[in-house]
Image 1 (cartoon, rainbow, N blue to C red):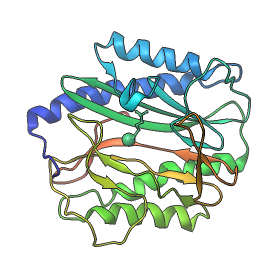
Image 2: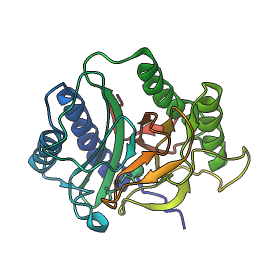
Image 3: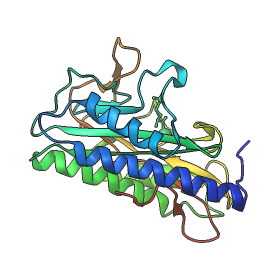
Amino acid sequence: MITLKSPHEIDLMRRSGKITAAARALAGEMVKPGVTTQEINDAVERFIRKQGAVPSFLHYNGYPASACISVNDEIIHGIPSPKRVLQEGDIVSVDVGAYIGGFHGDCAATFPCGRISPEARRLIDVTRQSFFEGIRFAREGQRLQDISAAVQSYVEQNGFSVVREYVGHGVGARMHESPEIPNFGRPGHGPRLLRGMTLAVEPMVNAGSAAITQLSDGWTVKTADGKWAAHYENTILITDGEPEILTAPAI
Ligand code: MF3
Ligand code: CO
């Protein structure tokens, strides 16, 4: 069952979305050589709590931190650590969620640490743009996999690959709601989109092959081939026209 949010619930999601997006921006500003992923996590958590919200990820299925911070060949769910010191040239994916007023926001982006290689820059840019290519189809009357197929085709046209094992999702009173939103699919397939749906669209893009490996920490997901990966996510609202990005401002 895909929940449709009422105008009042949408207002509440704008509030959680704004806080989540601001936490992402704060994290992005902290990405610099010499900073640890733990320091970024702690700043994100302090900021979310100062807004009166609660970090959505903390203790979710036993997850031990407030942000997921995934560096270079780590795709998603990297656990922040005081031992992980960022280096010039790294690319750093930060995924955050905030819960307030009964609703979650969920968003992510990959940030450059100092000067990065042109290929790393292109990976970040293609991943971000694939989200915007996808949400051109996030309109009432379209099918869900129209979004998925647009993300996939843009990524693959650019020589990269999409992760299959992890997907976007509905978001609202729960962080993970129906439907699943794969970053691959067939146009014209999947549920029909309706105004009031709130969706987390989140391309996870590998520079090399799509294959992944799971680290023994039980969380971190890496590329199997060791090539780098990027992530970009916003919570969006299906309207009677253009989709609205609830985790605004987008980065
Ligand atoms: N943003 C992630 C998602 O969309 C959630 C992180 S998983 C957690 O699924 F367990 F760390 F919360
Ligand atoms: Co998500």
